[in-house]
Image 1 (cartoon, rainbow, N blue to C red):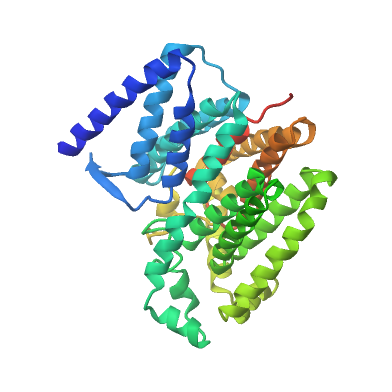
Image 2: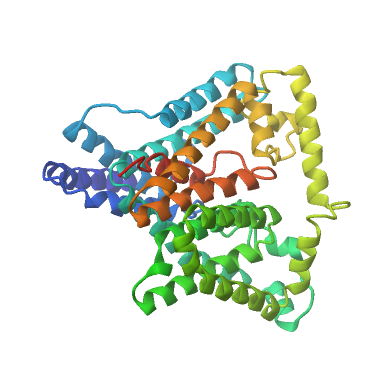
Length: 433
């Protein structure tokens, strides 16, 4: 009760600040809350309280405060509702998730997943609402929050590895247990306790691309350029040591697209930074005795025979296609939990097959429509806008979507908050100006 009272008091104080600020057109609180929500997304294992059987996390509190502020702002300043095609398709997708509960093979789990998507849609709504007509400030606030989260992610990783067998094996040059390192006690639990290394890899990929869009490599001050390189090296290091082949491939595809979309004038400025980052990556793998492990992971791109991860994914895909023969409209949201016999596995490990299996052709069509519209909007902005800072930011969002599309062939569904964050910013990219 004390925590609830404290939260209620916090909401009242926020309202007392928001109302006068909106009336005098002072919207600086937006950037503070955008930063806070993005910064706390990886803290999903930090529960502040339990309410109605669920855990309320620190990030959830900031999101609720942001929703309150956006609602007050809408009531005071402008009550019109302006929806883009992207918004309409996202709302239709969530409604379709609830519709499929009627034939879901696991209705209770389907309800949980549908509620999760609804929470994600709320985050999207706030971020999109606050980013439109002020795209660049919102982009920088969110990017700063995502990149800033690596301060405590590195600290968390150091605590996990300090005194462990993994740390001693790396220090001595001995081979270490890769599965243990990527598990819940190592990299896998870095973002949240029951997370996987795939979540860490996706977070690092998006952070790297947003950091490129921040434009620190074009800083007029040498200290700014050095800071850009140091932070980038730190995030690339996290990406490397996830040993996620899908993450590596997605990041490579995203960076390649970003370099193309920013144009030839800006590409020339990147040559020195590319050489420095490549040298830093090689030095990291050598100094940490990871050369053999990294080389082996690259070799598995081609020689997949006997790869347990690949074999499991193929098994999931085959079962999914077999289920579609009997359930042409999909097994319903959450139904893959039954499909894989409640083995603690519900991810098909393919974004597109996941949607086709659960939500049928309609769900997959909505997903592809959303991603196509968002990608088209950001690419257009990166090519036609006059302001180079806005072009770079739009290109980084388009590159993040490309990276997600690539990694989606082996990982994820759409429930991760980071992709909704990217979609919201991308939907706000200006079309001209």
